Image: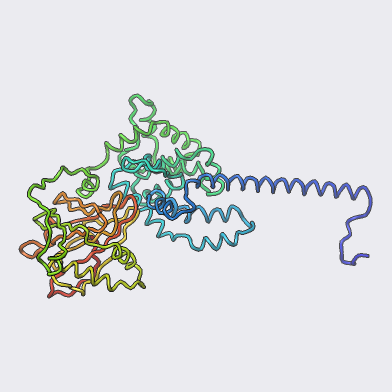
Length: 473
């Protein structure tokens, strides 16, 4: 028996069975479609896993080495912020999606990503690096086991375009287009939503907005239609042109050897500023015959037993480098001082006493030590480090070696000091008249590889109120 409200579809006739057979055939086709869709998704997953094979999964040392590279660190932040949420949408209502959703609640913020973008672009600009070289993992003439992908390059290009740096953005867009190739083109398009036609249009728009056509290759010896092409393209043309026309134009630009673009970029690049010259190592060698190294005994009774090793770097203004003035235990504590809960009072007293021994200024405990950690293109320009009339001297303790970048520089002195673990840099900011000495103006080069841990203290005139402004040296 069956319930009265139950629909009865089976009549026992062959005609009914044929209908069911046709129904099953439809279900089978649906299953094939679902299976193909799942197989396509599995292929995309495997492709993405292949792209991430270089990412270390285990071992703290390997992981630290990986994130110390600015290309890797930036790409990691961008993937977490932009790619992984798209995977959730692409996979849809599959098993274990709830766990992925939970993980995605912990991804970096947009501000984190933009800070990384700024840092990498600062490295490119200050150190005069080529976009195509950076994308291949080449940083300052050293090849690293790292690279950037099309989505990475687009993130950098978009930031530059939004900041109206169209010439620089076009280089990153062109690199993004060049990297948009098999086997990852389907992954970029279907999972990450990065369509090639849209990317072509973005690249063309960047070219059009360039004020000086710095990316338009010369016509001689390449293609007689270049000049005509350059004259025809305009903002309206890009907006109104079909995708095929834009693709044709972009392909013409891509057909030019990247070396030509590099030479064009060098031709139109502005003269480097003093800070950029310093960070790039373009200064001539300094004369140091009048400088010396010595032991410091005189500022306290303790130094008679354990003198400090001092190296003179400049006499006017006075700039000195002290060697081996931090213990390993203090360095660990200094790094923990950036955590509010950390109890570092003992180390603060110890370091303050050492500063007093170095300078003879007394403890001056009212001015706290500031712990600074720079990474991924972070640094400080001369405006951030501007001296004030109440700031007698500044001291910087370096808590680690910085492999590349992160140097403290004095542009007017042509002096560069690379951070070395356990050393301390001391300089005087005021001249004999008590005014800020322009020669003491300093900056910090962007960190390229690793991070820069430092502790700073500014010594002020006793009659002035202590400043709460951070000392960025």
